[in-house]
Amino acid sequence: MKEWALAIVVLGLMLIGCKNVIDTSATRASKLVTLADAERILDGTARLASERSGESESLRGGRESRCEYVGAGRATLTVVIQTAPGEESARGAYRESRSGLGSFERIEEMTGIGDEAFLSRGPTVRRLIVRTRAVVILLEARRDEGGGPSIDEMKKIAAHITGRL
Figure 1 (spheres, rainbow, N blue to C red):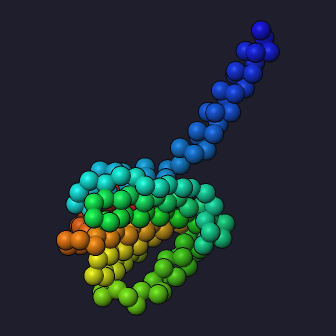
Figure 2 (cartoon, one colour):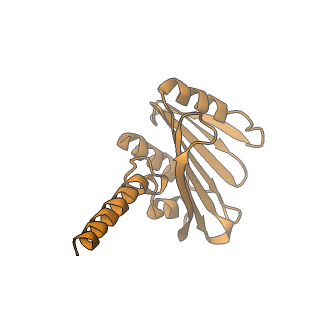
Figure 3 (cartoon, rainbow, N blue to C red):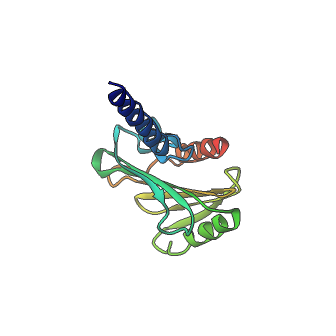
């Protein structure tokens, strides 16, 4: 009986440990940008389609959390939160994110959000990238049918995120 009770306690501790590894990150994308946020940006109902967290594939030594919300008419909101090992590394990732934006009609600097930010606009896509200390935040919204995603909501949510980090 004691062995069985000990096994249950150990299993319980393992499950608690796994949950903490997955769920308690302050930079989990779907925690920072909720379903309600996605619906305001996409101007309609949406659902969480995918989510993952782990080591960053593009930022050496960094962590990354990403999620994608899908709405009506092929509307999508992709959220990527990259945590760099240091502020200089995050600055480099932010600068690199500005390259390859030739397909966007307009790129503009944003003030009052994080340490530095820019918004790029295309016919059906809006991309807001913000750096605050060692964290780089990407919000990319697409709406193929009927107007563009809400830029004002993207800015509000990004400002809220930077205030929480």
